Image 1 (cartoon, helix red, strand yellow):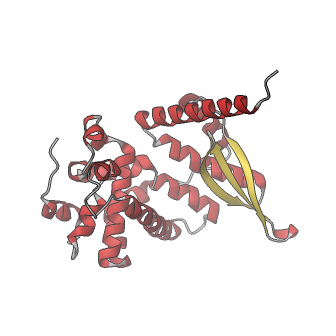
Image 2 (cartoon, rainbow, N blue to C red; image 1 turned 30 degrees about the vertical axis):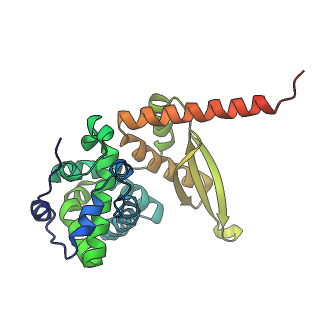
Image 3 (cartoon, helix red, strand yellow; image 1 turned 180 degrees about the vertical axis):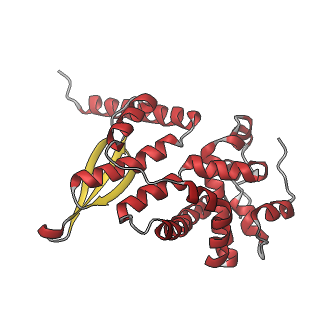
Length: 262
């Protein structure tokens, strides 16, 4: 599929016109394309994706605090995770038709990369960062509001009593594994302690949360991990399973090599 280069049309859809259009073009260069064009100094969109993730968290967090003044920090974090989940951002990118402008490597393009949730969500985050760098926080705030306000207005706070069960069922069904919960820090005095918990799936950290008790932190972390897992598409799940199996096989081989011969 040929890549669209009519960036004026994309800027109309975004509702923002760039002073430095190169930022927008960089935001739409996937790593697979950059790997095939190593002489191009522009590189890929991964650094912008990193920044855009932070900008989105700030803007959506601000809007949710206004909408849900009664929610505590951890509850806001989980509600935000619903809004900025991979699936949610991919849907926004799909509405904008962002996939038509993304530069992909030949193999990624042939395998349907333009419709992959992970690629679309990452590209949208990178575009948000490009707007932020080009026009400042006010421009980024306006863009996020324009494309996400409806989603923010419709999102509902969900209780946490069942999130650990929900995550376990999803992890078993999609990844054939069980989540573990690690206490990574305990903060504050005994009478006002906070616990930081990480959810680990297949030796990878999927979420982190803070709570007034271990139980609360586990539920908050499980909720965020469950929303993340729900947004991962089939191809990405298969890739994760294959990578984990390879890592497990390599670890077993290394352990066997270390054992003395009898």
